[in-house]
Image (cartoon, one colour):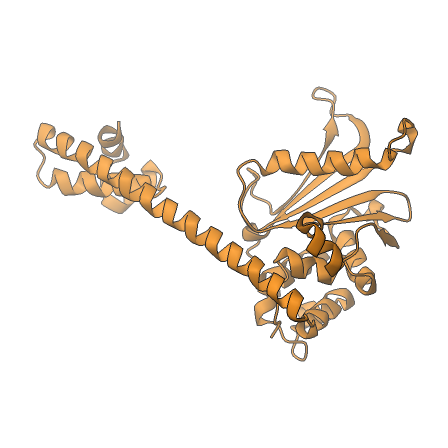
Length: 298
């Protein structure tokens, strides 16, 4: 069983951002790019380095690289949900793009930059787990420039099992999501037939962290667990407060309408509403017309 979680940015960068694993990174990038964009080589601009991480923890967050065609890549794994992640993604894309000039004024030095954002939470308002954004004319749909390309890969939206795998990206996402149940000596054939994914499983399974690295990895895990606990606490408190207000409003409505068992019904309606149920779902759950749900909630 893989001992490390590859979604933790520290482990992700050591696995995908180390010089000895460049072939894994190339395969991963190619699984995301279109057939016409496939790459054969890459130069890591900020390879995994424990000393750099100790001096500047921000250096561990992303992987910067340039392929043989001069195209730049900025790859980031993000576990903690951020409301303003879109702005963050644009900021880091812009930084990688603008830093290519290195203090000069030759705009011709600026090359295409592709941002790849791997998110362990839902963010984009789309059903598909992989979405690509470029710069187009609003009317003609013609591309203004190819220098901008941004990918969002939302791991939570991926709901395929091993038997449903169809693409290389499917294999990589299922690896990231289910590494905890994979063993290097018993890799499912759907993954084992992909040499790069197979190597990633094997590398992760035997990946060694020294005392200092292990401490940093555990600290990152603790930070993530604390964040999740804080968000869950805030969610529960918010629901309790909403239910309390809903109950007060429900009591008033129940008395006004004089309906038998109106108070309990109203409590249930508001509880479901605060839990995120739609009106039609509430109507079905309470076995009442949707119009009645609307009357209670208005």
